[in-house]
Image (cartoon, rainbow, N blue to C red; front, side, top):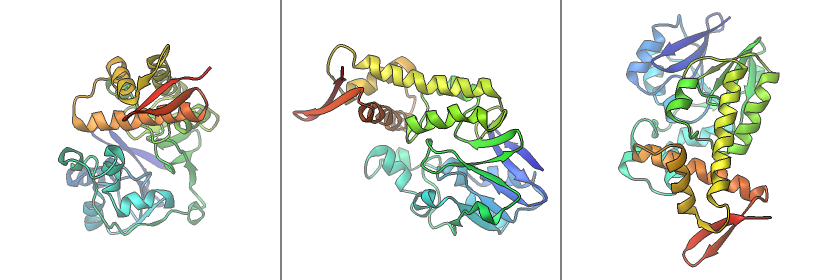
Length: 275
């Protein structure tokens, strides 16, 4: 039977008999508290390649040697963790983006996650937040990692980061067909109302982007500034680049759907509505 383990505001999923754990937190302290709640771990699965989910893996493996598995599409970021802050910044990143929340340990001994190895586990792919984020279904319960966020997280960070917000929106909308209780990595467990709140946050960002360009041309930077001021002013350089990267995903989604047009004017990319 799967059990939800909690360290601070972060949740983990653990199966005692199979000795399988999904995710391990950020650092040494989180790992120590997490292992105090486990009777042993033979397999550590990483739901996706964000440092707050795997940053403690080196400490975990030292204290509890075991297999380390992750979806193949997530592994480049696990082997070369500098890719995460570089993706957010768009190149070589400044010092504040190299802290433990965004830069995990390099060269982890990770192998491909193949759910066929675990016939008793119902693994699910939940793309959007990252390309191949995975979760686990346990009857009507589902550990969804960062496919959803708890209500208190949504209140604090109403502009959600997703690598592909359109895909994240579709993933969230389809969740009620698969379970009735959802365990996010961050924040409190919830049901269909939690799904609705996450969907509303994503849709609100799409609306804000469209309203930012309504009635005329706006540069990308003007759009980003307008939406951040409306939804969530960043408090740190990290949150600024998380917001910025997320919003570029919203803009590109709308461009691909034919709702926005992006063109180069001089040295700026400008966007406007397509009718």
